[in-house]
Length: 259
Image 1 (tube, helix red, strand yellow):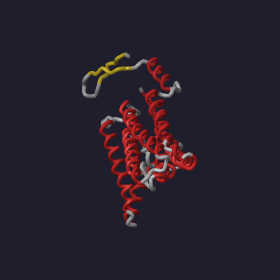
Image 2 (image 1 turned 90 degrees about the horizontal axis):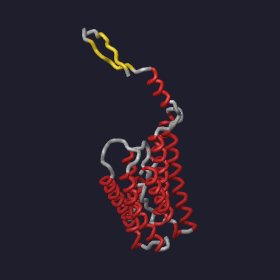
Image 3 (image 1 turned 90 degrees about the vertical axis):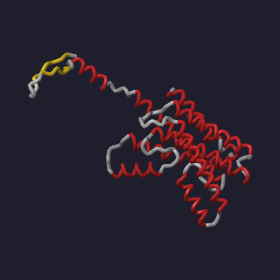
Image 4 (image 1 turned 120 degrees about the vertical axis):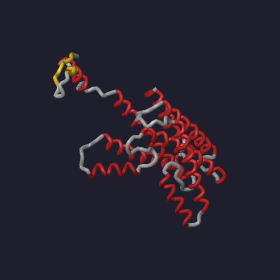
């Protein structure tokens, strides 16, 4: 780098830096090398993990709705409507299941909010995110073990504890995903994702990474729900092992890729 002295309009002399052509061409060469920046590679790996977490939410909702008395433990929007319908029809036992799910989900989200980095700077992933998901893993593990013990046919005495375990785990997951601040991705609901996707399509713009991500999120939730429903009909006692196994894979992949 060289400096040049220039005469400004205010009558003073200023020294400014001048970059040599060699330096400029070297910088451009790096920019045009075609290699994906490190942050870009990490973001791609993070997206895959978010798709897996969304798959987990879909399978958990299928299991809870079909096996725990028509209650959602991941999708709190749908769960709120189910609770309202139950109250409107004076079915207070059904409403109590939704209330437990809402409270447990809120508790899980609160726990995640306390444990993840509260900073506002954008991050691709962090050690704290992985630790929070490992806590979720404990809840899903206990849920899967209890589900297996009762053969996938829980009685009324264990339905509410199972709902609480599942919903708390999903609340933790949602809180962790929220810290990543990925546009249109919460891993537990796709209403905002669908809205964002339709807005992009209405604009008739070119394909963007967000469109691909949003479509993948919706397919992941659908796939998880379908897989959960199939397992319930084929091997009911082992159905809860699906979200457990996928979450184990997510935690291991996150530890290996980001730490």
